[in-house]
Length: 59
Image (cartoon, one colour):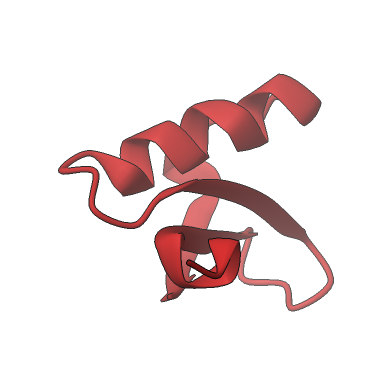
């Protein structure tokens, strides 16, 4: 099966800026896919959750 079909890519927009994006990915069928993606995004860059203004998921 195509890995892209099994992966949920999540974008987190910070501070209302289209230029300030974090990205994470998780298994599409995981109940906590967004939480897993958030942890992954935070490993690359520490951003407080209250700075996130939009979340977009693609699957």
